[in-house]
Image (cartoon, rainbow, N blue to C red):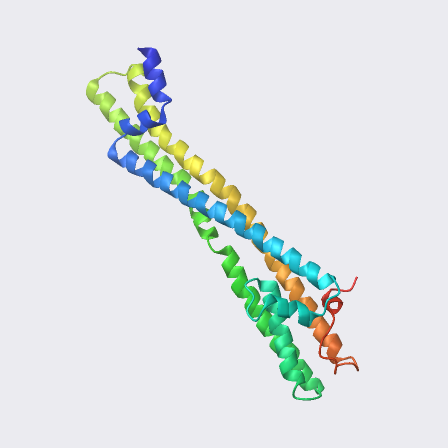
Length: 247
């Protein structure tokens, strides 16, 4: 008899079925939140892996010595990845301005300023896109333990009320009701811990990726500035090595 009672206290399904409606609702809500956070975690893991892999492949193309015109042409007029899209926008503004003839210093500064604003806009939109979904992880990580604790408190209050009504304080009578209540906290922690770890990990990944974009934008602006100050500004196709930061 005692073995059966002990087994039921360790059986999640039995604990769920024995809980009252409020605690059951809390358990179901926490389980849904956990599944939602895991969906975000899996999605973000694949997205960041793909973004970084594509960025590395693009940087290798630039380092291969091919002209930026060729790299931009291969990327297409509207690349999905931010790095080639930044290159396409910068080259488009460069060509559009150069077609009007030689540039004065003021016109060159305006060109750099226009490229800077366009690149900043791309970086801002991409930063928002890669951070999309992190709010879900943040909410699950911070709220789940407290929601589970509320279920535990509610379950314990109900258990004590039942004990008082029965007039029996035997541990065998108290333990199952307490186990049901504590199970809500366990579910809350099970939902919160992975969400908390993933939120911090993906926040760092998002910051690193945004920094990668900002570094490339600085390289593009520096290359345009050097080209504007060079007597060879009439050459329409800058080389890829001009867009890498000097050592």
